[in-house]
Length: 130
Image 1: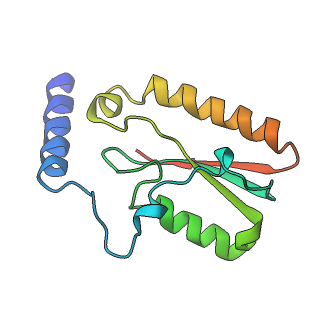
Image 2: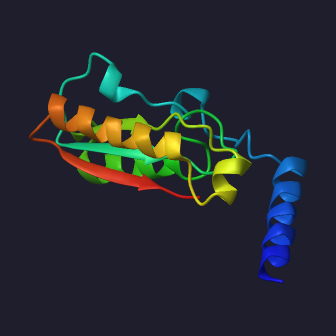
């Protein structure tokens, strides 16, 4: 019974997202859907945020939470104190139903290692949602 309820709820979520995918959000520019500060020419910042976007969201930061969180942190810390890196994992239904994406988890761990290696004195903040 529990399995059939889980399948029903999963199909319900899939159907609602498929019918209305969150691909565009007014006011969120395309450049804020992708952030790759760990791979650019930027210098080390006081804080590095690594963000994993929600299921079905575009880019590596998404549009629903990532850009707003980045903006809020930059406001609190100062833009010059914040580096941001999105996690470019599939963010698809399969990973959601499995409770997470193994490839995405490995990539997240690699990004944390890279951040600590490149900027050992920076604080690392991990954020994301399902």
